[in-house]
Structures are given as C-alpha cells and as structure tokens.
Figure 1 (tube, rainbow, N blue to C red):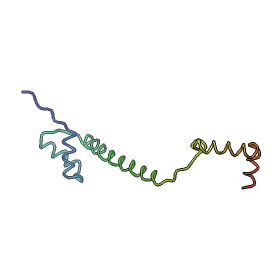
Figure 2: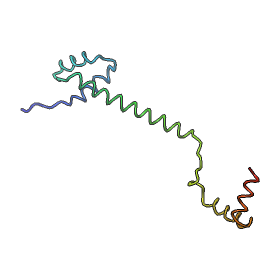
Figure 3: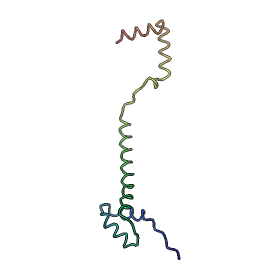
Figure 4: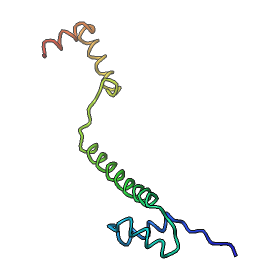
Length: 108
C-alpha cells in the first residue's frame, strides 16, 4: 500500500490553532511524534503567512475606515456638468468671461 501524504502546513496550522504561543522547538518535537518531519524554518514560514494575512486584513480595514471618514473634495475634473452649464449661462448674462473674472475679483 502506498504511503499517504500528509499536508505539513495544515498540521502546523492545526497545532498552532490550539496553542498559538507554542515554541517552535516544541512544535517540531510534537509533530515528529505524530510522524511528521518538519524543519523550524517551515513552521516560521507557515506562521508568517497566518500572521501576515491577519495583519494585512487589519490594515485594509483601518484604511477603509479612514477613507470613509475623510471628507470628499472636489477637483477641477470632478465638477458636475450642471455647474459648468450654469457658469456658461452666467458668462453670457455678464457679457463674457472677462466680465465674470472681474466679478470674481470683486468677491475676493
């Protein structure tokens, strides 16, 4: 009968799910008792992936929360078309764009 392959990464995750503060040296020994031969570097690699994913997810959540609280600013490119049409009508009533510029200078 063929030997059944064991997913070492899943075994490491399962071990650390039960005891997240387990030292790597002891984890290697416990897995060896179960017949799973792993290197300490493999445990560090798997744990880094677990912690990295959680950390990245927390960072994304924090960025989204900040973005939701940030006020929306309008740039020249985001001016609605209605405002531009109104501005053109104002320029026609004022007698041209140069007259609108003079009106704006008076307001400043």
